[in-house]
Image (cartoon, rainbow, N blue to C red):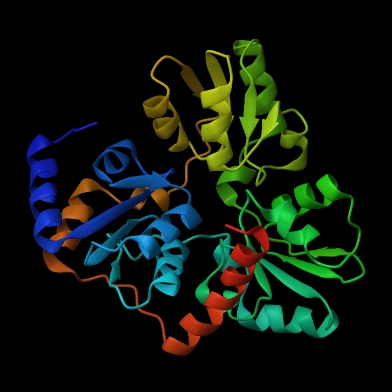
Length: 308
């Protein structure tokens, strides 16, 4: 999707000059995904950043907590963002002060933090999870120990339903983008395309998930749609995901449950901002050493438990 070949050419020149690795989340606009070295979910991209041995810098096209995670996993290498204003409303729904107050009410609870949290919140967590492995992470905690799951209430509810665990205290946060997907949107989309499987993200409302044929993380959506014999799909997540699915599956058609599932923060990154950051290097993401060290612990526990 080279909407501006001259701009893309200049980005390529500077990426080589800077020896930069460009990473783009699945929700970024199509032309940004098209110029990235890797497109994926937040943890997948952070791990690529950590494992790459060649690049001298990372340019992370996503929201702030994602770039922070890349810093946490590989702190010695510079990580930059094209637009530092690209934040995450879900991550902002829990503060250290709020978490301390709730932990005081549940002192023995294991704190399970979705990776969609700030580095500071990760420092107060026992273990992290992603939407793909949240069930396995919670199952790894002894059944007689209470679980404080944060910050997404819809993902937490989905986990609780999957395993039937009752001793979960679920934070009352939500992703505004996924929360805009309503039950009526699913019904309307099905009526328009009755043969298409409905695939939704676990951050969606319970009544939306109840109508879906498949509930999956963005990585799970990629696999499901590639392996399914269906020729068209209705997708219930941020609409940037359709760019990835269409690119990976040129013989299949993908339709959003609703065009309202549009994250304005993910759309802040443009090709112009990618170029400007490669030129000026103004927006490096920096974390204190003590935050990096402590925030890495719950991520490493997650990886150790899952064995990958």
